[in-house]
Length: 499
Ligand code: NAD
Image 1 (cartoon, protein in one colour):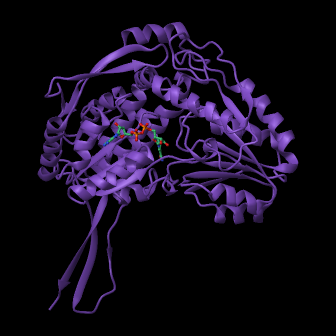
Image 2 (cartoon, helix red, strand yellow):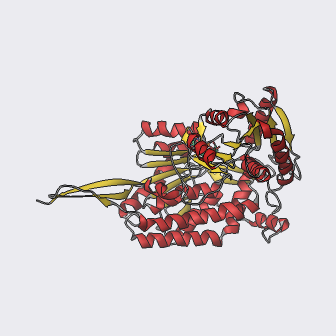
Image 3 (cartoon, helix red, strand yellow):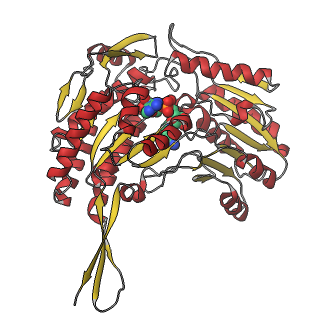
């Protein structure tokens, strides 16, 4: 547990430095139109800050600044080792300011402060370290051509990359998008989610403190359909790197078609199955992972294991273990309390949406087997208790749609083939887990499940080498991993006639 107490975090929160303006060309600037939007603290519903509301004019200025630095070559042509040094220093500054980052994200999206300190902040630091390490490992190559020719293929940055990110891991999603774009030598305009723009502004400021040239990494705040849309439609942006919902991910592809056919990578939602077979080696361990897989981060996780598929012969036994773990591990509480494992949902609307799904579940005839207590939840906050339905049928909405809250749907199956059929019966294909003691069954199921990430006898394990992304409508991109760096480059073929 972190040494600061709840009372000390509350004191820090009262004194927190909140940045509210865009960060363009190395300085904070007001929104050109002068408008603002409110960022609300979901722990109690209070207004945390009024943040400058960007629109097409602000995006134009930020893109121009990014383009200018790209053309100048201050970053794109900087010696690779020097570019590495800047990103390493940035990683060090994230570590130095870990508490400030943790506080900012906890204040605006309600994530438990302990999760920020143990997860989001160190993983964001690691993301910059990893992509810094990759910079001079990226190579072009020479092809085997005729004796009169020399043909080499090099990799060049794309130019200006627009990054659009969601609110569920504000700092980490920004890091996953911005770090590979910068490492490849691009300039960046980041549009954070309107619910959680605060840590992105600190990150961009620290990039300059780390020695990054002003104008290479810009942040424009604003609403999705205003600033986000203007960025995605911009004709001088070469790529949109997007994480968010399927609905908006599809808009990104449309915007690219309506403008300059920019590249688009999408990381979208999921309805990931956790499959527990009767031959699983340790049902207690499986139950613990299953509970974390759905209730961690309030269920606001793209890879949340929201469909729990249990082989019928162990269904009741396994369910009893899950309920036991769930009631001990997750109860909503104030996110600044270091003992809290579950904070509020991000907004009042998100809470209503999630409770709407709980109502659908009841109406459709699923059994509400568990509704946790609201624990020490705070008056005015957007809390939802951990909830679990059993006797869910694959056709029900709670089994098909991404809820993005702490609501689990338990289904039972007879055979591994049936489990695969249910698992694949989804528009999504982000992640899945299989719990079994049989090596061959594990590999067969991993092969047959249509998802970008399969966990065998674990959930949510991974490191920076893991390509993070999905099949089907979970998106077409891959975050983390070396390929994410390559996806921010384009190849150039140079054919030399030797005469
Ligand atoms: P969202 O799609 O509503 O918003 C994401 C971002 O897009 C925000 O910055 C928003 O302002 C912007 N946006 C919204 N409308 C826009 C428009 N018309 N034009 C341009 N930009 C627009 O998603 P959200 O509610 O912020 O995040 C939750 C979703 O993100 C879930 O579906 C979740 O699964 C997904 N997600 C996926 C991953 C992954 O790696 N696959 C990771 C985290 C979250």
